[in-house]
Image 1: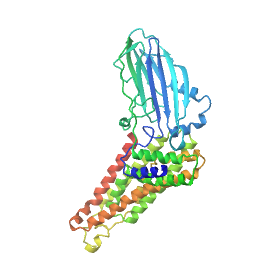
Image 2: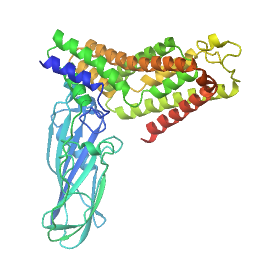
Image 3: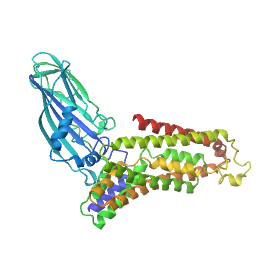
Length: 452
């Protein structure tokens, strides 16, 4: 029954709407912060919760000694800048604890809880400023709350309760624009204030998210039976195909390239194969690099790859546009005959350059799927690297299947339109139009990787 349910969910996932499939707001690379500030007449207490997703937890495994909680909470306190009326206050430890909740693909996550306090004489009106500078360069959810105990907070800019249940349940409506509160200024005075805040919004699930979680759970099974192995491979194919159907991976660019450069069915297959190879090799190399270095931020590496992919697409767009503008198109039926225009490029007689095809495939597979990367790392942690490589390969083949089908359908549609008399003349401007589209998309991908 479980096996049947997993397969049904995987099939339905192909039709599901795009959604985040990770337990963390920005993926399995995130380091998330929550600081709960309580202002007393004689002190300011701060409860800091740090949630490390699967990949940073894996990278920090060598540092997880018996004193890890105390040592890391010391770093969290060092990153807290607390001032009262502009005067810096010393933040002292009260307690430190750490848990390792299970995550995707059998990998653990980290939940660090640090209680700190700073002395403060708040017998009169004052301004309390708290700033979080712990690991400032890492991507993640950053949240602060504030309450008063015998102290009134005047129009506090942050709520009294956590929107994420202290990093336990991230609300779906905020995942597209995660909280990024790293500093707060509180005006306080003796007295009491009415409780304020927001309710805890529980994160929902989607069919795609459920199927992805089932995939990573199967990959992380301690007992690898033949049934579990087959189901995991099938899910890797299905989820790779559905992942490629989401925004990204150059579908628009590949389609435009094949349409504007007289692409053939063989060209579509070449692009799909290149995507598979690039994605598989990329996941393996990145997994190796991340496993070997705790200093490398995985999201920074993905950003670099995203920029490289965008620049590559942009360069191809520039080349295509220059080629299209320099070429003098010949109308269909002149020089080739009406009987051959359908099969020979609609008047311009040029086949898609093999270098451009490979470049498009590389751009489509250069940025790896975090789910595939997590599955690989989970398999390595369980001592079965070969199985992780097999699942990553299946994921890449699934992606390539979707992209190849897009290319084949586009080529077939273009040829059918070209065979219709009233559409033929319109194909003379197609190379320039599609080249411009490739260029615009490339610039957009680059900008999103740099500033998104």
